[in-house]
Amino acid sequence: CLPFGCRERLARLHPQMPTYLSGSLVTLAIMAVIMRLNPLSHRLICPAQTQERHTMAADSSFDVVSKYDRQEVDNAVNQASKEISQRYDFRGVDASIELAGETITVTANSAERVLAALDVLESKLFRRGVSLKVLDLGDKEPKASGKLYKLVCPLREGLSQENAKKITKAIRESFPKGVKALIQGDEVRVSSKSRDDLQAVIAMLKELDIDAALQFTNYR
Image (cartoon, rainbow, N blue to C red; front, side, top):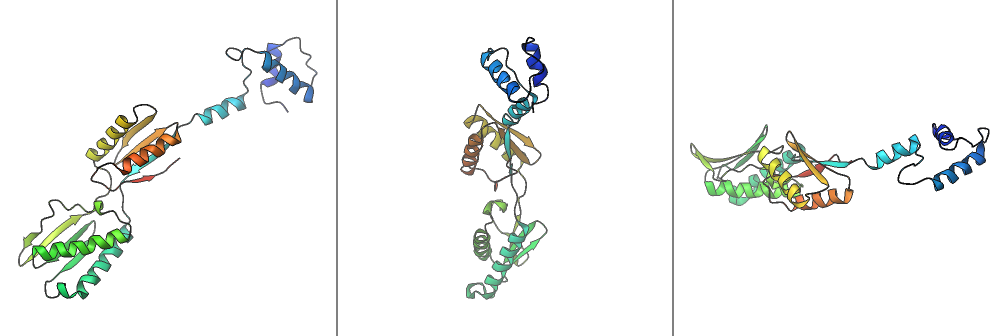
């Protein structure tokens, strides 16, 4: 069975060819015509071939995002709270770690004990596969609040415009041809015709010095 449109195109190219040919004879005739035509100007292209070439030329892409697993953060906070409640060096210092909304608050009766409790929290986050970059520590200086000291740590999610611009700039400088990067809200879409280039971009971004936890999603 001939693809739609091929018989008519063949008839226009070779009007003397009998129209009653069918089956394998037509197939052989088409092959002969294709071999004789100039490949640069008069190719016999069927619709199915055109669609296949269009599909092959489509870009691949992925998204650069900055997110965290809320459940894992909650688990880390619970584990850290349990540990400081049991450790001898935290007895009598009113140390606590609390997660409320998108903020973690570390509290103790001295700035030193606050930072010690923060170390416990960071170790639990790391063990649960949560990047420490999700913690916005600011200047990392506990602030006095009555008789206690507190360190308020908002959780970062989504790329800031500054970080998104830093990512797109790094991609343009390292891959000036063949790779496109577009800021879309708090994410960056990276696309290219070469999957190898996209893998190289991911490797480069993993080494990029940026104040955000990066993930690479929607690879297609």
